[in-house]
Length: 314
Length: 142
Image (tube, rainbow over all chains, first blue to last red):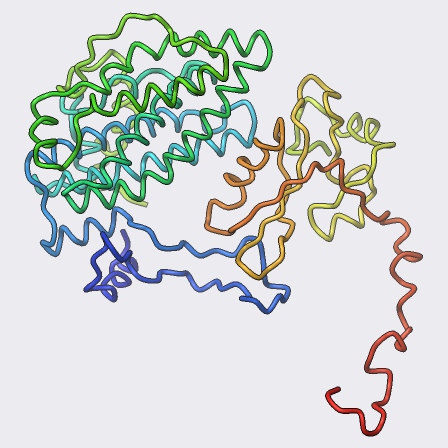
């Protein structure tokens, strides 16, 4: 992002980020090591090493990676999933039931935004566009996110129900994508899968507690699942793109993720004594740019600043 | 003061509730000098409808070989959620490799009002330090 970041990256010039990470970027606030003195603080700050969108942008800039049209279209789909969900979850900031949960949902939103930035940065390389071009200057029908991600937050239980489906789906997807023949997709997924694993735990803990809490909380989580379950099927739909990419080993067919998703979510639902809602499935179409009435409002809010003040920064 | 300035639990009410409650570790050294009731309040489990979540103290170990250090406190409905909240609140900038959470009500702390009798007694007793003694001749490895 800043020149400082870029120059730091230059020092790790020959590093293949997909394998080795990008070198030490610690900010110079060092802990006391094993000396045990007073500065051995619990709030020592080192960012640690992990793949960042900036690293991908740099690889693109150097001409080291360039996705094919198909791979870019696929990266756009999962990038948009994360972007729209992050925008939705961000609405919980300052509004969740407790301060602690506020931060938990905020962290999850930022994780999703991080994945989106990586995937969109990579996708954009096929068309000479930046992550910001793709996030802020596409129109509704150009977004490829599935309908589940744009569903309204509802109450806390609805958000948890949506989060439960999303995190178990994304965990299966990213786990498989770690084996992708596309090194960048594999690297982004390897980073994302650890975070999504925590999202699974977070949502599963809450499903169990809401279902086993009071009559009120149980009624709400049942209602929450009823509202979001119609959008499960779309996540696991195969189409021409996924068929071509599965043949090339870039991804797997979404339908192949369904059995494990059903088994793992089923275990938690059984433990929570909840039933999979017997609701009809929505028509979907998000992957083809056909969205529900909700996406337009999300985009309006998300894009207004960038469109009113193109190139604005702070 | 109620934790996080909960407007539903005014300070005066909180101090009344907590007058007889066991004292808890202050979140930082300075607040130990204030009156006990105004420290981080122990919210008795289920004492009020508005704040049913109990208070937990969080200890984070920043790296292998160091001790867990008190990082702060948080609210959570149970131990499992307290650990997760602690992870989200206190290790989001890569601060830790291990977390302990302890119910605040389980911590007994020394009374700030008896600092004199508790902590001033060792002062001047330099014979309790090894440097007070002269080394005997012929003793090696001291």
